[in-house]
Image (cartoon, rainbow, N blue to C red):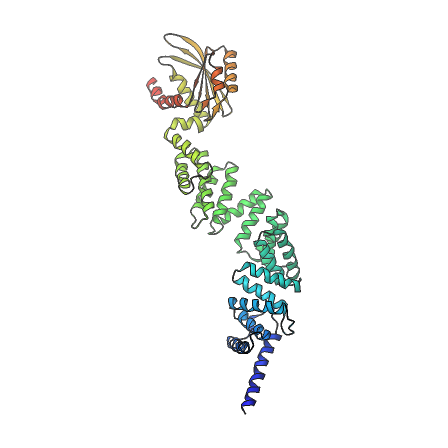
Length: 456
């Protein structure tokens, strides 16, 4: 009787194992086709019994790995499939699907984010079947993540032959083509991917980048503006939208973009620094130095060597403390000329001043010609105000001297917030030209308002 019971038990175990081994093992198996949890437990229990008796029982390992995989026990499945890989490489087992073992080893490793193991499994699986959708898709996505975009495109194109409208394939294919600078092709696939999966914000962002690369700026801006509030893509979208507005001198729009970007939480450090930097430089362009300085200081406290932040701080802290210096260097031509007129009117004590002509050379300098009448002398004086903090060379001074001779002026006064080179200074040694550099000019700018008010 005990022998009969043993035979029946063996028949039942064999039946379960044959059922597991003969059923379809494709990745896309419907859950309704999987064994129940109880059935899986039975399979695992019986497989362990067989392996206890024979650790090299390949069919038992195969059943065990399949049960773990169906149960989504990825770590156990991967280790069991890995053990199988070593055995089936040297042994031909009729009831074991080598392709499936390699594929599922790769899929289990992928679930565990063990990329190298996954790549190995899919590569081995592809040696058995090159036309399998899962293999080509998974390998293509891995090649994309490894930045091997040419290989990724080749594999994903093959996956697309099996499933032309798969959103994930279209997505990776579009992104890979974009990385290869094949913008028009990329847009085609990314648009299709978005149509099938409208919630994919990263693809929407990449589509905007495609539009930007194709110089379709309005379409790009519409998408970037739409994404500004997104918690993940928002900071980058704000940065690019703001940069587009900054490059086209739409400063108020750029400021709005950068400010929205900075309101996000969990901004990547490099994006945060660049948002602050570009906001600060935009404030500088709109002469709002007081708003720029706090952002520059925050950048400096985070990364003291970031771009030219240290130079900007040293320059604009000084400018922010001296309104006239700020006007001299940064304000509109009208405000700059008005300040220069004040300087001319107050430069000589107890003098009557008659301004004859004002000439502005682009936004680089202004020449003011004036008749000066003092109790001791009268003459025609030409003032040149140069709007730079850099070095002024001999050529500009020579040009100024030629202008003096042309108008038969008695003297020239050349002012800059920067400095004059040694060559420029040597040129003026025997000529009636006074060179006024930063320190003296700053003193003049500090006192000009009071002097002007005293004149009434």
